[in-house]
Image (cartoon, rainbow, N blue to C red):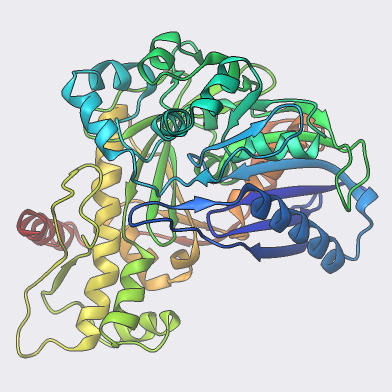
Length: 493
């Protein structure tokens, strides 16, 4: 087991460590949760030391599960929650304040003011993003404005900014490097997609000193070696960085333009590889860097998200009491041949791309005296899939190319009924991988490329394995009827 790759998957509520071998078998896995901090409504923070402590604990437990010595780790790859914003002292590595999490909405007024001042067109042209509190730039500006001492130190080059990946690499390397990759940099509102560099105009707009920004390196290269990390020997190459959704795209071997993946979690994230040039969306999607490889290859992606996916199943369980556990929904939904004309639009938090209607609310249409909880369960699953159909339709139209493949992951992808309906409503086959750990797999693949565990993307594609394929079998007329009912219901939401 001397060729183990350690994938660090640092998420919003917990840190996961996976040990994978050359054949992609998971030899050890552990997840350690850490506390969420809610200083006031709409604010969400993390303690950077809690993130680091949970990551160390997860690594220790994963090694124990694998029965592996720390010296068996050949390389480390990192994937992370993307827009969460951290600042730390360059000399000591000590965090200067709590991290502001991607979910945090405290900069909504700042974003609204920037829009009102006419800046959004420039920001969207350069970054591919919307002016929204979701992204890192306005969070960082808020930190600097709230603490004049922090701003002075940042301008003097004493303070480092980074997303979670940058912080982890700094800690793993004993402070030797301050780096990120384009997949994370492209989520900050400070990075130009075309030049692949930090942008002076964007930094000036958000009053962010260039001195605090990390160096942007490839997504797969050896940035530094471990030094002084509890539980790991010095000298292990830290060899990959990728934001979580881009990492899942790489982990699904979506290497060709037109390849796409959808992750079904609490919400759902759809990314489509659009090739070597950024594609500006005309339909409310985000344009992002997917990865940059050691040979200079840069891939871009279009990204769309549905705010509610698995959360709709939680609503059936916790809000309506229709099911006792999430696992029960498939059998209940399969107990009826169809949804009985019922349509559920799960717009509990508004509608995201391509509609962008924050005022929208969930709606159920088509109820009759014959409607049962089974019909509601089936219609809820169908509503999840119909949201993805809207996103994929926007992706295909923006990209100007057909979908070549759709691969799925995330907890709800285990639901065969949902996946079959998704294939039916898209009219395209869907592949579910043998390993559902696609986000960590992407970080492992990238680290393996950088350290020659795998010689090429082709070797990785050969190593990727399909567990099940769902082939469309719904007649065209039935598909169109579903889509017509969906469009009508969305208009009322």
